[in-house]
Image 1 (cartoon, helix red, strand yellow):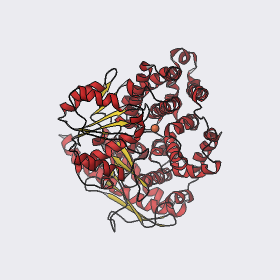
Image 2 (tube, rainbow over the protein chains, first blue to last red):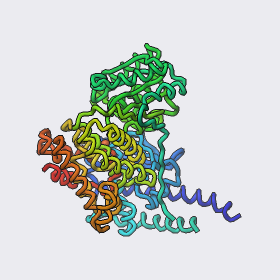
Image 3 (cartoon, rainbow over the protein chains, first blue to last red):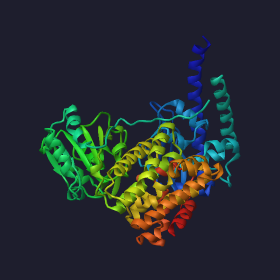
Image 4 (cartoon, rainbow over the protein chains, first blue to last red):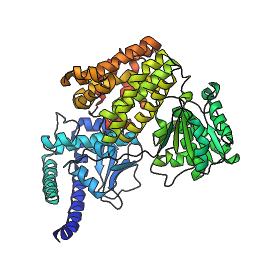
Length: 181
Length: 395
Ligand SMILES: [Fe+2]
């Protein structure tokens, strides 16, 4: 009986978490492109006006970001102003949750066929490196080591964003524990 | 509880061994194919490798309806369109690709056009565009290395835009791969060596990169064992048909391994070097493999150490302390490269190729960072890291 009632709650909570984390990551991507030189060295190779999204199949949520030039990223919320150039799609909300709660590395999720790339793979490679770097900014070191391949030595990101992200992460951790027990 | 998840998929029927070609008429007829078209290149035809294929079909009551033997080393959208035109004009109903990577990729691309319609293969570029099975498609590999007969990928150059178009779909996989020792018996020594090193790299990267899984591991280790057993024997005696079959099977097995677990930095650097300096793929693999393993060492110590068993055999493995096995595996690969250099001058460094300029290393590094396979390398690779590895591989 409990199981039956818990399920829809779990679905809703998981979706809400992914939506929130997309928002946090969208803002964080914008911020990181402003303060972090090595992120810009990746993003500057994207064409100006390049629009990319991370999306959960089949109907969202989504995260839209634009490269506005000189390596700067702009967060567009969940509605693209025009068709996107690159789409990274999670096959299921559960997979998005795994990645966004840092239980699974982004690269591993690619390797595990949890996500699809629609567009130029070389741009997807760049964006994965930026996401790896972002994760290491947001996460406490111990968790980051699990989520990304390498933990960068020099990191500075607005404290507010880091705090927000870590709060959501805590939510996710509790959520994972509840769902498992 | 583990978070480990993986997918493993290989629906290709493998038809391998003595008189394997003679099974083709039965297999093709079983798929209602009556007018197969052969897609191949001039080299294959000149080496007389088409003769046993044609004879096997004819004797089995199946006429080859058409033969296209002008696939270039880097296949293009124009070539694919032309072959599709002939296929339709000759009312063919299936494709047999005979050759190496380029002929096989071309066969896959032609199969898209003749099954789905249209003249512009570029329309089908990307992942997951195809939604249904294509025409019957058989592959007869004539090199033992690429593993393309079991991968769901094809790359075709768009000449007008000068870009390489990738195609990814499980529907590109052939219905059957025919591994017949006759098809690789006449492969010249340096190509035998380079393509075997490509297969060895597929197995090694499959076993040490991020998407390794229990099933791909089994194929990778079995492939490595076959290559380390048979490569030098075949180099010493090119007519060793049993050894040739071992290498051909190893190549297919390594292909199954890496198409399910991906490859890493060796391939990223190799693809970039191929594009900039036009070196053969297998040669690039052989050059970069030990340097990349050294770069990745601390992230892959355990799996790399395990490979010593398959590279050097149980005696060496058990005599080597566990903490030294990873280094032992790298040493075994270096030793193999030294022997191949003595036997056929397969280069061990970029300098030894005589075709790479030191000034090109930076652009190779930059291009390698854009390669899809770098995503699955166990260590994050920065531009500086790539440059360092290239500098070591320079010589
Ligand atoms: Fe390869």
